Structures are given as structure tokens and as C-alpha cells.
Image (tube, rainbow, N blue to C red):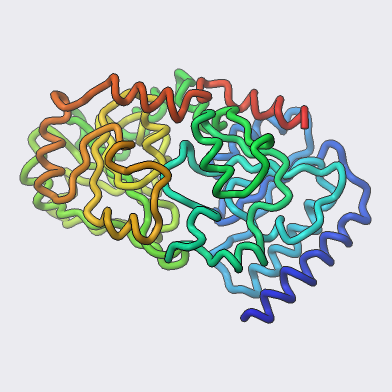
Length: 378
């Protein structure tokens, strides 16, 4: 496997990119690269819409984590030949493919990242942790090379991204995150409410709890945290309904007992996380960066962290978890139930607002426009 990786990244990928550089650079060509997702994600949709007006836009999919090594290599070689004559290349995850080549003069790679804020450690920040790749491996096959611009949600986040990517601070810009513009569009709330009512009509008249955890394990074998749906129903169904939104890496839907179906529903495949956050009255999560986006709505958050110590050891955080979280931290089902019942009295809007201003200060509905201007001024 190590020989295959060496040949792939050190020989074949640079070769195909150099062959592509024989083509004339196209000043109006923009390629959006989805590293893992099989469809264009919300990280790109508004940017794609913006650039499509003036540029020739294309989308490429690497399918990392969902295809064989041979198929991934084939996708990578095809991508490198495709982007070799592009003026701008957008990515939203770490990419050792685009980092394996000597970037063409006149071409720029823009990293918009898929998460807001700075919460869980990633990149070089996890090099010595069990979750991350070893430092020697990251240096041999880098993930953050060739970046021309990194966009983040506020000035507070710059240091974390600098440490994680080991890039010059000058290329990290607090432009805001493009997809957050969605929350500032008036029709977004109306459409989300309409879609939710169609899918979950039993929820009418109840407060909506959104449970949206991050994944555990590796990308290929990602699993979610489990809930006791019957216990939650027995304690909360008089006032609340529960909606589950799994992380995109988690392939199996949550198993909800039939007798809980009127109380709990997994809408992972039916609604986007943005739509569900707009509809939710309370967001319950663990270590997901969606808390930064949800803070834009100034609504209650509750944290369910039954495996916090393990997560500290395996992944870690840029800030103290207990000090960062703008809401109660619970460790058991009983604690979670108590926090939900007390959500209206326990909600500290000032705390959430301070959190929002600190980590999402550049997200004001105009992030896409700022990123567009920053790219054109590279």
C-alpha cells in the first residue's frame, strides 16, 4: 500500500497535472471540487451560483472514502488534468491530491472549509493524537499545500486554522462562510417550515428538538451516538418532538422504535441541516461545529457529551469544551431530559450572542459576496 501511495502521489498525480498544464490557462474557468460528497454541498452552492454568472463553472467529485483505492486514483488523475488549466479551484475539505503537485502560475486554490468556527482539532493539530494522521505522513503527503486563500467565519478563528493547516496567516481571511447567507434570506425560513410540515405533520403544536451529533470513528466506518428514544418519549412527548439529523459520514439511519415514530423522526435524507436548524426550537448536539451556525439564530443549545473524555483523548478541542459551549453540558439521558424540560428558563441569550459575535462575527448575509471579491483580488 505504501508503494502504491508513493507512485500515486509522487509520480502519477504530478505527471497528469503537468500534462494538463500543456493546455492554455483559461481565465474564466472555475472548478469546484467535492472531496467526499457525491453531490454539491451547501458549502459551494451559493458560490457556484455567484460565479456562474460570469465564469465557466464545473464541479468534480473525488468520492474520497466511498470508492476503492484504484477508483480514487482514477478520479484524482482525472481531476488534476481537469483543474490544470483552471484559473480558480475551490475545495472545502483537506486534499492531499491538490497538494501533490506544483501549482501552475496564474492558478489559485481557495479553501472554503466545510465547518464554521474553531471547535474540534483537525489537520496538523491532531498529528500526535490517535484520530489524526502521523506528523511524518502529513509532511510527506501534505493536505494544505498550494492554498491561495482560506476563508473563515471570524477573526477569532484565524489562529486555529493557521495551526491546523500550517499556512501563512496572510492568506486566511475572515470573510465569513458562504452558506451562512442562507439564514439571512427571508424565504429560507418559510420554505423550511413548509417542508417540515409536509414531512412531519405530527409535530404541529409541539416544540421541535433537533438532535444533530457529529460522527465517531473513521470516515469510512463512521457511527453515531445512540439515544434512548423510549425514555425520551416518556419524559418529553407532552411538549416536544425530536428530529434526528445524522452526520453525512454516517451511512445508517438512526433506529427509532415504531412506537416512537410519532415523537421522533430521522429526516437526514429529507431535509438539509440548514432547513432543520431554521425549524428547530432547541438544538442538541455533542461536538459538532453546527453550533456556530445555530448561534446565528440566537436559540437554545444543549450539549450531550457522554464520551467527552474519550473525545478529548482521540481528537481534542481548540478551547476548553465546558467553557466554550454556550449552553448546559449533559452526560446522561436523565441530565439531557432535565435540560430540555428547563430549556426556556435555562436559556441565556446573552451567552449565545457573545459566542456568536466571537466566532461568527463575519457572517452577516454577505459572505458570498466578500469571498467573490477576495478571489477576484488574489
